Image (cartoon, rainbow, N blue to C red; front, side):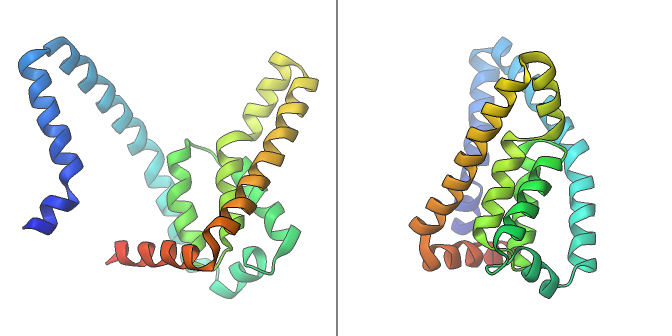
Amino acid sequence: MKKTLKRYRLFILMVLIYIGLYIFARDLFFGSTTKAFGSLKEMMLVIPPIFVLLGLLDVWVPKETMVKLMGKGSGLKGMGLAFFLGSAAAGPLYGAFPVAITLLKKGSSFTNVLILMGAWSTTKLPMLMFEAASLGIEFTLLRFGLNLVGILGIAFISELVLGHNGEEAILQRIANNEA
């Protein structure tokens, strides 16, 4: 019972807050509820296709292939593939987390997964085209270059700071959450 309460403490806290809002600030309650259900609807449209694609990736791509393409020894090829997949991905950033978990389980390097997530969040191809048309090619190229440096810097620094033990702890946490 204590373990269940601890696991769902944030959810329980949010329910209590919503009850309080309903009692003391109904306008805020209804506004918040409308936004929450709008976000939930958006997630329900985005997440299922991502999970279908991840299931196909899990079945169709052998672990050895993923290690060769994006594993520790993949070098620039792996970084380039991670960057391309992140930039070409559709959907909001929360869709990147299940993808990252699947790639880590398949043997991708932590650095390449961080590059994919960084590219997913900042360098989407449709966004770059719209930005170039709206703000100019010079601005777009400058921002893209700075994003590229930032993404690579964050990925390498994160790997250095976490080290092997930190990466293992993350992989262990992923394995524990599956059970």
